[in-house]
Each structure stands twice: as C-alpha cells, then as structure tokens.
Image (cartoon, rainbow, N blue to C red):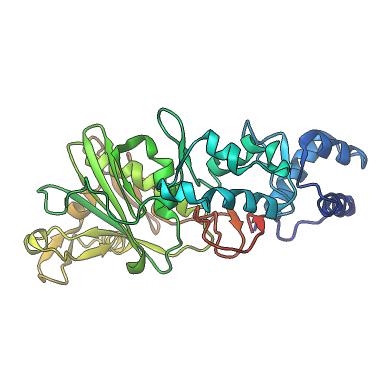
Length: 365
C-alpha cells in the first residue's frame, strides 16, 4: 500500500474521528462542501483537504470519487448503506427475471425509501463507476448488470474453434477471481455483437473481426477465439482491457498462454499451449525453436509470438539486460498489482462481483 510508513499528522486523526462520529450519528454521506468546512476548522485548505480525501478513500475511511462528475460532490461515509443500496438492485426479483436489465422506473421503485431517494443518481453512478463496473447503459435506454445475465450459453453462438485461421489466446489463473468476464462485458459493451452475451461469455465485433470470450471458472481460465481480417489488433485491445482489470487486484497470479501452431495441434481439439513467459526466455537464450509436448515437433518461437501481433506492426525484439522489449502495438506482459474497492466478504469490487453478504465497503486495502 502506498501509504505504508507515512507519518500521520494528529489533526488527520481528529478529522477521521469527526467523520466517524458523523457516520455513527446517522449520516450515510455528506457533501464535499461539508467536508471542506470540517477540514477548515483545523486550518486545512482545499488542496490539502483533497490530498487527505484521497488518503481516507484509499484507507477505507470513506468513498470519494472526486474525478467522477456525478460523484465528486458526495462523500460516502457509510459503506453498509452503499452496499445495501446496490443489493436492492441486484437482489430484485423483477430484474433477475429480466436477466439483469432495468430502467430508471425500476430504480425509482427500488430506491423508494427516504434514505435513498435523494441519492438515486449517485447510487447508479457508483454502479457504473470504473472501480465497480456493475452495470452499463444500454442503447435506447435502460441498464444491464452482466452478473445477472442468463447462465446458459447464448442461442446465437456457434462453435468457432474450428474456423481456419482463427486466433486463440488464454489466461490461466492460480486463483480466478469472480467478475473478470462481467467487468470485461461492461468495459467493451459497445462492441457486443447482436446482444450475444451470457453470464460466462460474450461475442464481440470490431472492424470486421469477431471475438468469442469465455470464462471457464472451474478450470480457472479465460479463453479468447478470434477470426476476421483484423484479429491481431482486436486481440491487443481485449488484452489491454483485461490487463486493466487485472491491475485492480493485489498479487494476482495469471499466465498468458499461446497455442502451438504445429501441424498436429492445428488439427487437434486439445492444442498444446505455451507459457508466454517461457517463449520470452527462449528468445533471451537465443533459442529459435521450442518442442511441442504433444507432437514433439520443433516449432519456431518467433512465429508463435508474431501470431498475436498486429500485422501492420513490425516486431522488433531486442535484448537489453534481462528484458525483451516488443515494440509496436503490443502490451507489457508483466501483471502489475493495484488497489481497488472491496465490498465486504465475497463482494469483491476489484472483480466487479457482488456475491457476498457482509455489508461493508472499504477502499484500496
């Protein structure tokens, strides 16, 4: 955590205690102006108050999304109030029956209690916020929460794994957090093809290229199959989006896998997949070929990697120390860690998943 070892001024402790007293006295939220006035009582001007707001947000004292136009003027003191408000939507029988679809009238009816009526717009903004990514706005009005989509594979999906020239890519997880696929759906919803999505998969289209992304939770992997004339570029876009999601988890262990392209594997339903990191090690060692564990044939490492590159980019691999730098329209392979917001228990908003039942929210632990 970025504040480890940070000296905590005594006045900050006092302000935190004041905020806690406000929460205990029944304030689920306060305005940003209220917060500034509280800070001013201790001679803290707005620039320092903003820094303190970030600190308290990261520490989990409150939630304040000051870069969100709708949420910037509200500081949420009561995590349970926020969580309960979100659950009212996700647990609603009508919305479940509609496969996660709802509209403003539904929200007016659901958030009808006095404690929610004045903050309906903000609660919806929280659900759409990039920290949570619980729902997105539909064309023509209304909203969709992907985690309430039907479980069964969409009826329009056809099996695409045997299409000649299709491009395959996988993520394999040591432990797969829930919500990665549903957050991907929220982030890339504009590219969903003909509403083809279900709880564990989505069919995307981009510039004449199609991508079928499936979450295989019990196998702890995410699979991507693309076909079309621009599949390398589209894969790069999808990988970049998934990387954004990965970066919101702490210490996530995940491997990127590339399928073998030997003659036997191209015909097989169970292709051998290489670890991308292993292929980089081969290149560092100056080894141009790797052995397929199924066919025992030698396969060109460069060809394996170039299969996932954009055709309009030249792959320029240069060895600098212990690093391989891939220039062009490519993305860093190391999985970095970052903080996100966790909604108590199983309710992990790092992964956009509201499946738990403990009613607490803390941010960026």
